[in-house]
Image 1 (cartoon, rainbow, N blue to C red):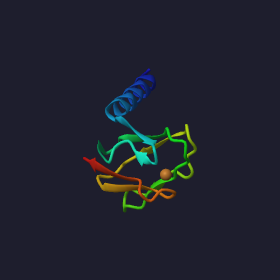
Image 2: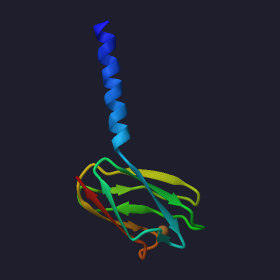
Image 3: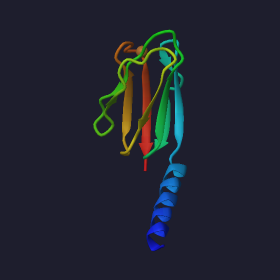
Image 4: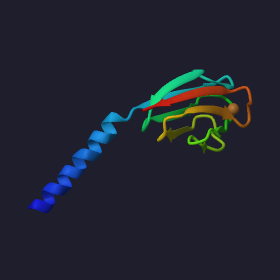
Length: 106
Ligand SMILES: [Cu+2]
């Protein structure tokens, strides 16, 4: 019986952690990001939604916030989760004018 209780407790912790983390959506349309700046907390997920007629390749080479979601075709949605407090400069490899600043706070 004790073992069952421990497993139930772990499941509750996992649910609590999920409830605290937020998901913020960033749209791409007209070869630009829907917002120029965004502030999220550590553990939050940014969902990149390509609502454009062009493909995009969103990435960041900012230290501690590196990611590259690759070629994202129109209509595709991709998630990036931030696990460090950083100021991430987000760009598109195909469209250098696309710029987004994501501030990740504790
Ligand atoms: Cu692009």
